[in-house]
Length: 29
Image (cartoon, rainbow, N blue to C red):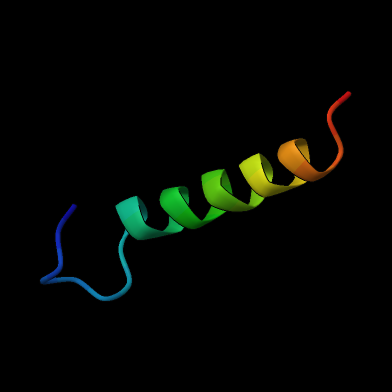
């Protein structure tokens, strides 16, 4: 986790993964 770059690929991937995980947890298939 690089804090030097506010907007980076890692941050974007983490956000997407977090959102996907949230949806999965909220609506488990």
